Amino acid sequence: MPATVQQPQRAPDGATVHYEPHRPEQTTLCRLVQQHAASFFAEAEAAAAADLPQFVKDEFAAFLEWAHRIASAWRRRR
Image 1 (cartoon, rainbow, N blue to C red):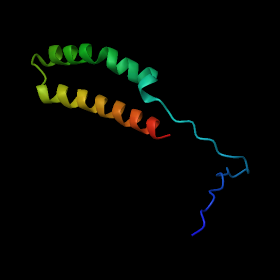
Image 2 (spheres, rainbow, N blue to C red; image 1 turned 135 degrees about the vertical axis):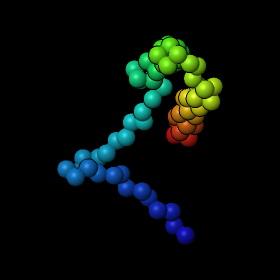
Image 3 (cartoon, helix red, strand yellow; image 1 turned 90 degrees about the vertical axis):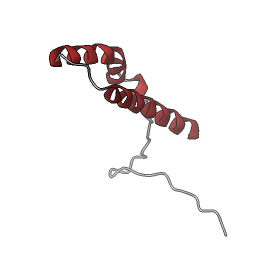
Image 4 (cartoon, rainbow, N blue to C red; image 1 turned 180 degrees about the horizontal axis):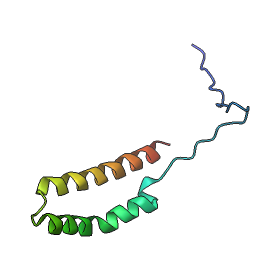
């Protein structure tokens, strides 16, 4: 079976499409979230006059770690 050659994708105007992967862990938003998560939780707890459930903090940390792992794995495959 002959190998097929994948043609470069083209934009509607005929220009070649070039995709540059994002690095979400290097964005301003990600840095701000990581830097201010602890103070956000502290302010939320002070406003509610109660501690946030630990599972909320754990799930938030797990989500950030998951996003970082996904981004890293995607870059390694390229």
